[in-house]
Image 1 (cartoon, rainbow over the protein chains, first blue to last red):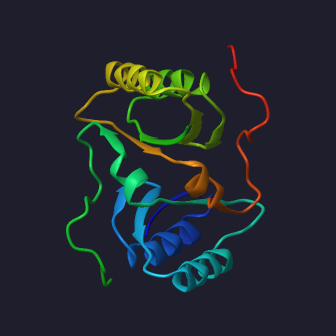
Image 2: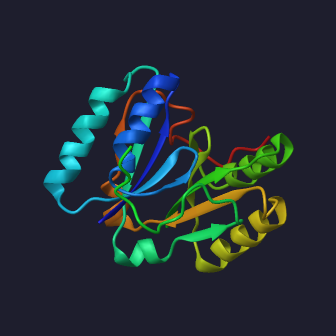
Length: 93
Length: 93
């Protein structure tokens, strides 16, 4: 399942940590948006728990939007600016 | 249908114009993310066309993720930071 994850994180260090965690699941498609390929519900819960650990719940916000094949294929992109389109992910840093 | 719209817009004026256009459809839920309630497919096409007019296709990017009732209800939000949660929209400025 592809989960669109968008975040507003105030602190640079926390933002980097969140991006690092998300980059293990899929590409960053905008500065603060990742498309995460999450194979199971259990993995989704693990990712949620990890993100809860990383952010400051008062200052930051993460929104996770699960998609299904139908809705994901209806996505629509305007503009060529790409941060890191989907080619190969599991980026090891 | 709720469409999650996320954008990376370089120019301040263009970014404001995009936010203004989107605010007519629903709340800004993050700095660069709106949840737009788009009633018909025809309206979705009008919104797409409007966004295409507003952005610079080389510098900017807008991603539109349609949801359905099931996937939208699976959204998951971590953190209290809210820009403008869903209460009443059709904001006239």
